[in-house]
Image 1 (cartoon, rainbow, N blue to C red):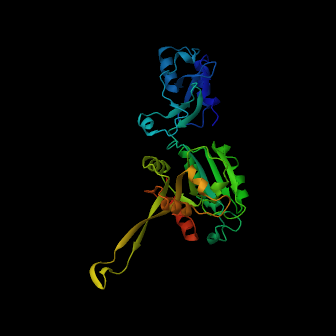
Image 2: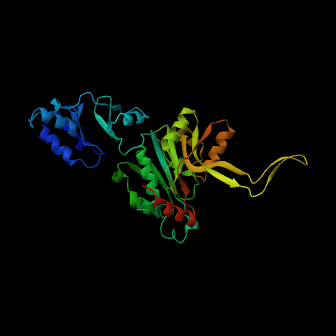
Length: 347
């Protein structure tokens, strides 16, 4: 996001500030940040600050440094993970991130962002989607419409809402359609790079083609999911349990229509009548320590489950985090129809 439209020099007047505030369209609260000649932020200024000043004095030419809030709340731009819940609970709407020189680097719009995660992400979007043919004969599966936008865009917008600014998309089948649609990501205020697979690389092989990830952990997810997975909860599970990888899980229930025996040799020692068993299954969303990527063979077919198995077998720590909301893996016409019906009832 460009920041010029929310910055104002300390020698500007209240009238100048009103004009700037009136032009703001892309943040959830009208606010300006007041800076000196060196770009150092000296305070924040809202329409409320202006109203209070004008109520005391009708001087619309008064400079904004006289009325701005110099005890404004801010965070260090290099803080890494920022727990924004405490700011949201304090009714703060816009949280500025300042560098060590007290210059504005970024703002967090708490009215639109769910979290600020120190992650880069890769979205896997190279598959053919044969089971959805003929729908996918001329359109890549991730670009099938779900409500008012493609399936993959739901996932990218959710990643953005958690503060993720750099996204890699692995593409192969009809990948140009995905690239043409999203471009470099600037229209969404993020950066998107495309990882082209010249051959199928499985669900993790494309990670090996990224030269360098700039965050300590990387989020990997399938592009054909429709879910309200909580990326922050998954990330905190990974960090708090000091794990190497965290995987989102979904419950899979198996109903057995018969009595199940518990036996000892040939004797039945107990039985359960028509029991149900609940298993936690892989939901296709992962956060992993980027050092694990070195274990992935370069430009070769490799599934994320291969990495998970190696991690467990070598004494690493793999944790799972249940998705408590909805999750649909859009792999077949039935799944796609279910997602299309489900989205009609979402607010």
